[in-house]
Image 1 (cartoon, rainbow, N blue to C red):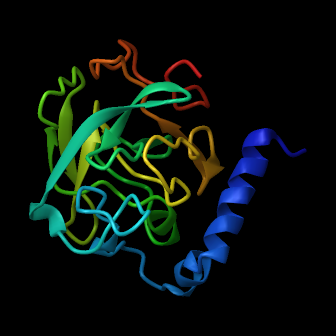
Image 2 (cartoon, rainbow, N blue to C red):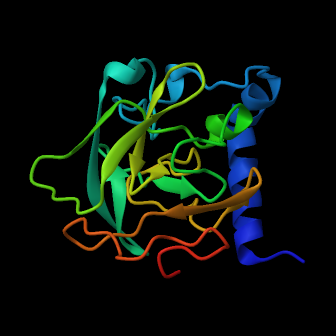
Length: 188
């Protein structure tokens, strides 16, 4: 049975295939993402992530208004997501997964004028890349989000678990309860 979220995920993958990203992801034999998916760097044209930067770059986070409400976003306004299969100390999104869901990497900080009530932190991915965490969840952007404020990855079931945008209050305050790993996620 196809749900709206399944169709949306299929649409996103079809769009990525059209853009040539699916071919690149499937031909990669690496299980460790390259630094080309650094969401904390300056983005390439209409992309939430960009080339180079390594883990010594700053990963500035802010909030962005979306159809879901206010969500956590990278400095370019692209929504950041958490993956239900991850733990507080380990990302379970590598290889092709990290091609579609680029990790937010670098040293985390709130954008100027933004107060985030959640706890910023980091984990070390295989290969030594530093990935940003928020309230213990490793963060990612989504390749099918092609403009700031899009939330095409919210509720997507892909690479073994669901993905969720981090919904915040207008000031950047996260909900008091931790998100559920069983399909719920910040109340939607």
